[in-house]
Each structure stands twice: as C-alpha cells, then as structure tokens.
Length: 282
Image (cartoon, rainbow, N blue to C red; front, side, top):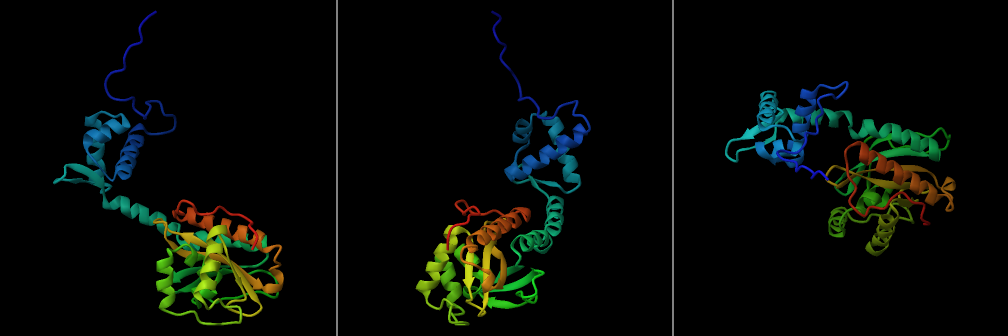
C-alpha cells in the first residue's frame, strides 16, 4: 500500500484559478480586505497564511488597497488595519439601510397583518419620539404626528425599550422624569412598572393597556443597534375594543417578529437570550 504523502507548505488557497464568472484578482483582494476587517489588525504573514495566498501576492494586494484607502499600514506596530475608504463604504450601506427606510415595508406588512396602525419611535432620554407611522385603513384608528413625544413608562415602544435596559439604567432614566399619571391605568409605582417590564422582557413585547390615552391600546417591541443596545421600537396601536385579550398574544408575536426583522436589516444584533417571537399569554 502506497504511503500517503504529507502535505507541505502553505494551506491550499481558497481562491480557485477557474472561478467561473469572477475575477480571481478581485476575489483575492476582497478576501484580503475581509480578513483584515475580521482580524481588526493583522501582519502580512498572518494574512497570507489565513487566505492561502503567497506573501508576495498578498503584499501587492495590500499596497493596492492602501493606495485606494481601503487599508492602512501601522508603521509602529508593523501590521495592517482597515482604512478610511472602507469606513466610507460602510457609511453608504448604513445610509441605504437607515432605520426609517428599512422599517417602512416591515411596518406596512405589520399593519396589513394586524389591521392596526404601525408606529416607529426612537428613544430620547426618558421619552420616545415617534418618527414614522403606517396608518391602518380602519376609519377609527390611532394617529401620532412625527415628532410626538411621550414618556417611556406610558408607551408601548417605551416600555419595550425599558425592558431591554439593565434595571439600574432604567431606574435612572425614570427618576429624571418621574412616573406621571396620564390615565387611571398608567403604571405610576416602581413595583407595578418593573413587574410589567419583567413580563415584557420574558415574552418579547409590551402591552400598553390604555396607559397613555383612554380607549387606546398599544403593543410594542424593541429594536437593537449594532452594539446590542436598545434604541428604538416598533408598535401597533388602535382602539382597545379591537385588542381582544385572546388575540393580544398573537398580535404581540407579530410585533416582536417585525422588530427582529428591522434589527437584522439595519445591521443590529439582539443580545443572547432575547426571546424569539412567541404568543405567550398576557
């Protein structure tokens, strides 16, 4: 039996000579760029070994990327880092995937599935500011003008955001504004509010039972940014008569799913352990 030959030298390159429909040199350059981005800083030798391309070729790729500003060489540490043009490219992506632009089609789908007005709000200190809305076709419906503010503790999106914050941070925010009463259902004691936030955190969506406006109810869920920070929320709102207790869990799961879709599309990340969309009972 012929003994198997030991493989010697560098690892096999991930770039094939006969990649149909692609430019091998561009494939290699983009592979190097992604490797630098993943490593944050890397030496020439490490990059060459990680992608299986000869050191001389890797160096030519790096100097070409450097010429265009996509990578830079740190003279002091003698390694390669991402350059300003890569950042500008990322900014262009972020502009295309801005919260408002990305959210609108998801909100429209949410409105169509639930039959209720879909809202988008961002956190601003202890308040949320409504920045977008897709109105339902129902003649009796909720409406919040852009720029409308409301206290977090009396808002579906606000309670969703609060539930995703560490308790100490949430308490500091609330202490700066107080637990004002808007209706007889507003949660104005810390015990009542934090019990409600615990339920929200467990199921992935909040329920505002006429806590801001009499006769109006709202279900919200949190949107996370790329740092896993809660910074916005999506919700549905409408007359309380249409928020049947038997249907609320189903609506909550739809809102939670919409929030998770928006989080993903803007490049956000939910912290590990964040509940998946579910129709738990209220």
